[in-house]
Length: 76
Image (cartoon, rainbow, N blue to C red; front, side):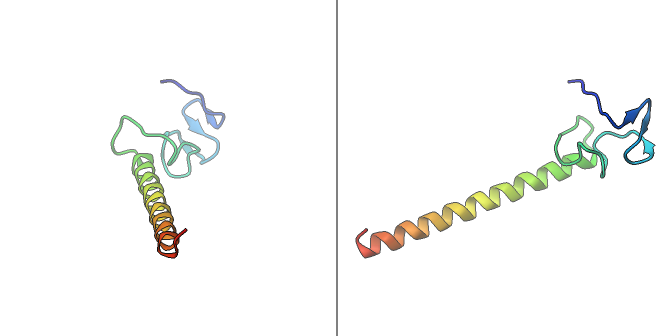
């Protein structure tokens, strides 16, 4: 997949003032995209974001089950 970044000027990143390294911390893609290079910092950030999303969903599910159990105890 190809993409164009508005901050990239040749091999340079105007946003970070460094040589462009897509997915590095501070990059607009950081934590939003998984890269083929496993050492790209964005990959770990994406994994952390997904883990946090799953934990939140599990907590919401547990709260909903607790609420339904309370309703069932009271006879709806």
